[in-house]
Image (cartoon, one colour):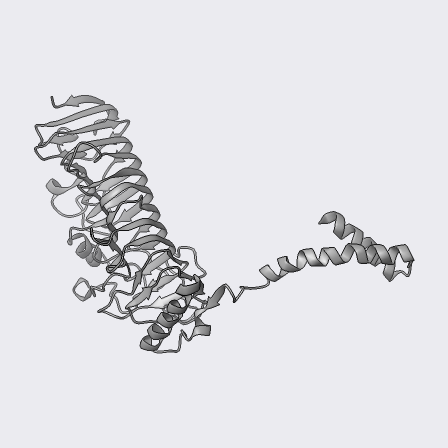
Length: 440
């Protein structure tokens, strides 16, 4: 390109100063025509969205000034059309959100794409207390907002529950899920990326059933604080679901209306739910996940196995609760994380890690510590580092971990006489080396 450009420039300069010759004219034509043919498609691609491939929902009748009923109807018509050709619908940014009723079915092959990365703390209108950009405003209290079918994508969008309380725990609106897997067909291949939720009750419900399983789900760069305490729940997903770079935080809409009050956060914790739940799942992958102000961080169900790495579970009652119902493949590898278990008023029920059932748990480089945080009611300490319970044989290895701010004499509380536990190279609350074998 540089050689072509220099040659064309030289010939054009020659033209301007009047140094014409037959060879100059011939060389200019020969050089410039292929160059124009080469760069024209590039300019066409960067000049704006190709409406034949990326179609604005406004062009299809979904507009900020419409009623939520009209927008829901027009969006569904647009999705129905896009399903046959596998089109992507562009959620064109606006200073006013798209007010839309629930009950939307994102049919197979369709993408809904907005302009945003995850907008933690919120976008903000210059004069109004509301987000701007690719924003769906939701006030429908009866219907799930959007149900996804196979081979679908939702990316770069904000979901705003404009009527949800920030301060009154008695006024929390229990909205249906924002996004759920299909309950009438097997959903395989869903990509959820760069989404932010404000005021949601249950963000992503991928609890499928044995009759209509879900598979190949990717959840990445998702931000919210569900007032049910449940951000992502997955059940009956047998082909490697991935939860990547997700962030649950009550300060998520600080720039819009402010963060949630202490009383609301306490009410969320009181529901005794987990921010992330995995069950009936093969080889799940959880990487770089965060939660703050949840009762539980991550529940690894009886019929699940996989890997959990690079995590922070902050201001929780239970950090990780791992279960298992057989010794063959109910095994989890857990590494590189920190847990701050301190929430509530009763220290006896606060445990960074609980393990029960069957299977093996390998834990390495995990730190647990506790302290005060004014954002929620807490006791600034935990009962222990790990609680092991049940009556079936299970095995645990704990390596290179830091355990502190627990009140029990020993960091490991073992209530299972059939458990076999080995701790190597770890540090207890007194900053002493802790190497121990527990069990037969």
